[in-house]
Image (cartoon, rainbow, N blue to C red; front, side, top):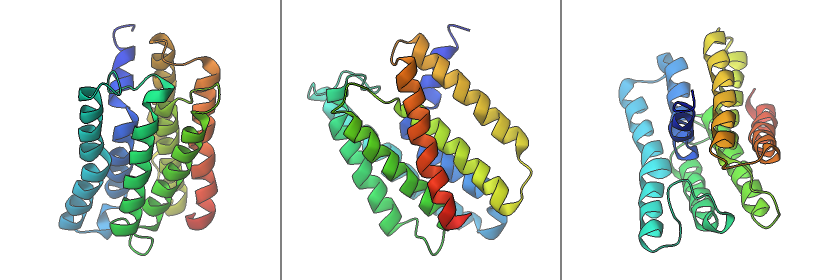
Length: 201
């Protein structure tokens, strides 16, 4: 188990959560969209939330601004957070619109609010777990889709809840966060997504 736990930190790295959200959305609602549309928008989501951020991370590592992809120290997180905010904003303004994908649009807006809170927290004594923000927000989003469209995806939701536990255990095992930071991450991930429910659920 100790060898498996770190794997959850990489599989559910915050940088991949937007893609997972898009995949879940189009997987459960694929009858409303053509395959070309799904592919096009998944490419756009991947480009803006994975490929460009990875390029920025690589540049920052090369320049010695951060040590690795996990960006464990608070001072290492400022630039990545700002880049994430900008790219998520571009995504909601230029690609995932409220007219075409209201649920996904508000999912990304919830992510923006969570990132803003996490950025502000950099100036406090706590380092909020971005991993927990990501996996908990994804879980709440999938729950919302299930409720809104009355889709029976209990197994998927149960799987995500279990993954929340494994990711939390992984971060604690790797000594990347304390228990309060894990709890704060869950809170900051869940609350903005629940608040977004009022706009689309």
